Image (cartoon, rainbow, N blue to C red; front, side, top):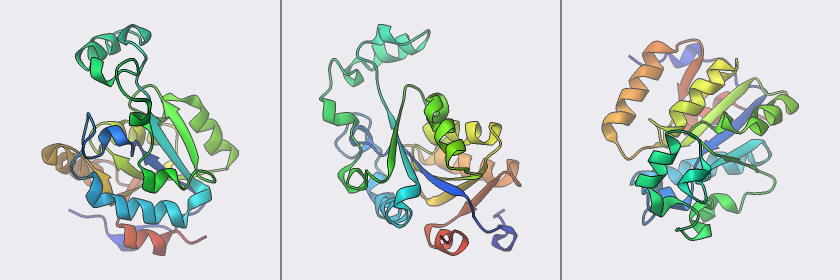
Length: 202
């Protein structure tokens, strides 16, 4: 079942939140997401159009596993090659097609899955009087999911650009898209990148 596009309200007072489009997730990166190249043109187009209202999040790994609390230490012992002590600093950079848009686009670094795990993000959105968060990025079923649920919890309307998300798991991506359509009606809308330009006019 798809959202009826006729029910989608005009997008106002919005920010484009692009999740973790970083070299570490790009082809050749340690956590490569094969779909990234496929969705990058759509994401770059959105970020270019709404450059001053785009926020890029970056997942910043710890210097060492012991620098994170609780079970994150176990996680980063497993992925020790992803710690900043082991990997080139450039691995956590945005991919070049998006990095060139900063500034005026903003960058928010985060220590966990949700972009809102950095409290600066919520503060920035309040400062900009944002009511709607337009979400793109990686990965659909991990950091995007966590960020979407945080945004819903904080009372933001969420608009997901369905052809501007990527995951390393087809099953995970498809399951999440079904959940967004069927479980969050009224809080989460799904649009294509082409439709976004029609609903969000500045």
